[in-house]
Length: 427
Image (tube, rainbow, N blue to C red; front, side, top):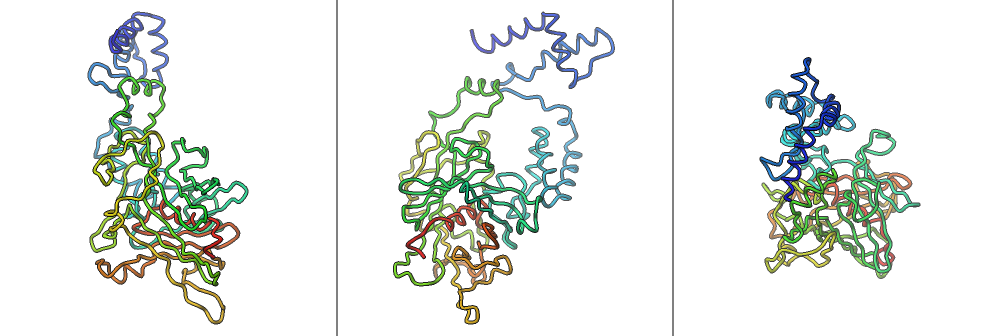
């Protein structure tokens, strides 16, 4: 018997049962009030039974009733959300904007249209903001707390733990996993489940055996026609109220290399980053960087699938890893970052950089990254001298991280995590 016919007959049997009808009325009393008379009550019950949350006759996909808040006029709803979005500019007040997007689908769509990206407004709203480029003018100031006992690194939004206190917003969490030939820094949205199958997993940083080279992998949706969900699997997922698991792959989006110090000369570390996912044209006048709109585990989004050098789409299973480098055409147009050369201070007898008061403790981990532009690139001199990412120590196991366009919070956090790795041949 077809599934639609079975559910339709099951609903007719339920409507004919008086006990079932009374139970159904009592269960829906908090949504739709009962009528005053018995006749209107029975008609209300039958209409609510026929208007179930599962719409089978008109559509092949399940439709969820949004409730009375979805019936507000669009002009009024737009004005309400705009007022909330304009009033709340920082956390924890910013959570009111997120609450507006959680009311129903119509509220969520309007909120997504009103809320701007970090590049445009300079602050975070939704979790996807962590993978979007930062602002162009002023950097976003964050700090990292290191937990040595658990090998955990937590990224917070704020100036420092002393100034932000309990108002600091947790952004990302990284867990270091030591392996026989490498080390992995697994990056999550939350620190509840440190497994690669977790829905909070968004990427990782992998090092080589010597700790001199690193690769940043971002979780991306896997585009395989054989892995698409069937109507039967979608029904099972809907009835269980569990979002479907989208197959993902880890794409190599950046590489970090530290220069070897074989002679053991004193001085700061020298590193270089190649951002495969950011074209060098993003720093040119009128250039733009890639701005994702949803995470890989969101089944509603369908961005363009990645294509390899032969023009074919990758066919891989759940949580696969693409360890190879991108095509040469991508590498030639990728943005390169290098650490800003420090100067030797005669009075202090040390190497110094101008961190503008954001770094207070001398450490070999401190660095500033600027664009490594070649003569053929049309990048202004002022843009080349602008610090894109700076990282430094301010206390025991406390570090600051300030980043700006074209890096995202995830990319900046992964680059800073490479500084925590053991580098016996780079110091």
